[in-house]
Every structure is written in structure tokens, then in C-alpha cells.
Image (cartoon, rainbow, N blue to C red; front, side):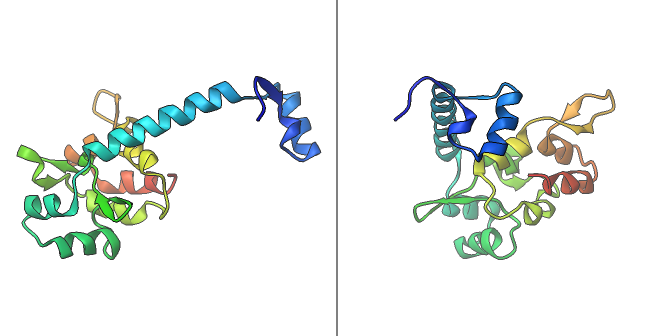
Length: 162
């Protein structure tokens, strides 16, 4: 195991390492370890705050089987599996006690690339996007954009970039 800072040339082909080193890039193992720890903690928070398929079924007034179909076949709900359990993030729900989906969000989910990181998906939907602005020119998150009943097409275009 290496410690401290290393130049990129230890891990890259010589021509690529030369480009990185010329740009002043170095590999910092401490920063990498901190980023991994932060990402792991964020994933745990996302998992802990997610709903399971049975809870979503009750909230939406459908069967658990229908929830799984919407996750896997229709892709009109977003979720990811941890072991054998579905984790369905809360960002996609709105209303009193989160009993409804954000308007038109189900149009966006099929466009999310399969295999996208759950954290990347959650950040995409919950962080402001410069391409989605309110009447004052302030950026909105895709969830806020859709909740305000703006056209889903704007969010759908951004989903391809995930």
C-alpha cells in the first residue's frame, strides 16, 4: 500500500501520465480515502431514508407486485436493491405523508441510464440545475421544477447526461 502523494505516472500509461503530470495532477490517497468515506456515509443515509416496496405499495394504493413492475419493467418508479430489498428514495414522493409521486417524474425515470449510481440519481433530482430556472432566474432542482408543473421535457433532456 502506498501512502502520501504520488504522481499519476505510477498508474497510467506513459503518454497519459505525462498529460496529467504536465497539468500538475497528482494522486492524493488521503483525499481519495476521505471521498470514499463521504460517499459511503451518503449512501447509508440514502438507504436509511428510503422506503421499501411494501410501504410504497400502501402509500400508492397498489400491490407490492405492481411496485416491482414499476421499478423493473415500466421504470416509472426509481429504486435500487440492497441485497434482496428494494430501496425507493423519498425524493420522488410529495404531498401529505408522501403519498403521491412528484408530477411527471415517472416520465424521467426510464431515461436514467441503467446502472447509474443511486447517489448520482438522488443528487440529480434534488440539487439545483442551472438549466432549470424559476421566474427569478434562480436554478431549481428537477424535483422542484416538476413539482411546480413546469414541462417535464426539460428534465428529460438533462436525464441523459447522468
